[in-house]
Length: 163
Image 1 (cartoon, helix red, strand yellow):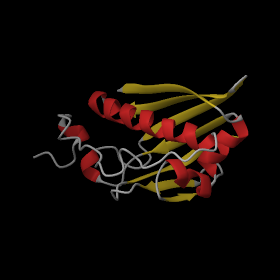
Image 2 (cartoon, one colour):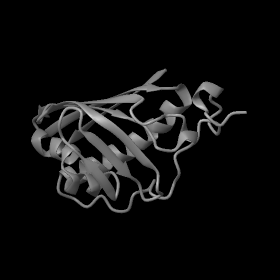
Image 3 (spheres, one colour):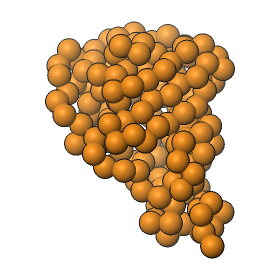
Image 4 (cartoon, one colour):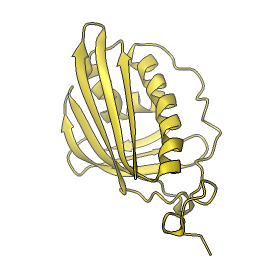
């Protein structure tokens, strides 16, 4: 397994950035056009991208303005990352210019981690724009499908459709 780790500075205070993860009306501005969020420990976090691919997990930890932890996975079995099978940890730290967001995504196999690293780079950039009060514009990944385990050459334990 490999970690995805990203840090980005955002021109917005930690409570504003936090709200973009727990309030549906803000979440859909940067991540996906449809979402269902229950911001409490054990509550569901689910979103569907423009291409129809959906992620789902549950909140593990929520500390307003400081920390967000949720499980994560895709509803498409061919991706090989089932709902709730990985964990995303987000730490928010106040800095002079706003907030430093540090994200760690645990539990992804090497090539799948690389694919998610690119996705997080895209979506955190969109979050930074939205949290600063700007329109992030069209999602560059909006029409792309999530790669399957087979297309990334992952072993059969990550590919439920391997023969």
